[in-house]
Image (tube, rainbow, N blue to C red):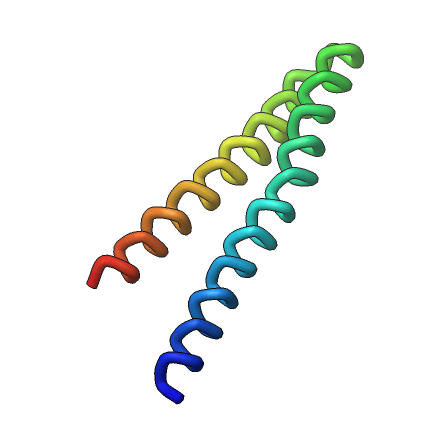
Length: 74
């Protein structure tokens, strides 16, 4: 019984990891598109916002991944 619960929780963690990565893709696309369209409009503010969105998205993905790895090691 305990093994079944552990297998189920491991599968749920993997699913959660994939969901997080799939949610990251639209954020990345949004950030890059704002940078590009801000360049066409000659708007440094829009480019900065797009850069911030992209960097924060990468940062959240990497930090969450490191925390997830630390929890599994302990």
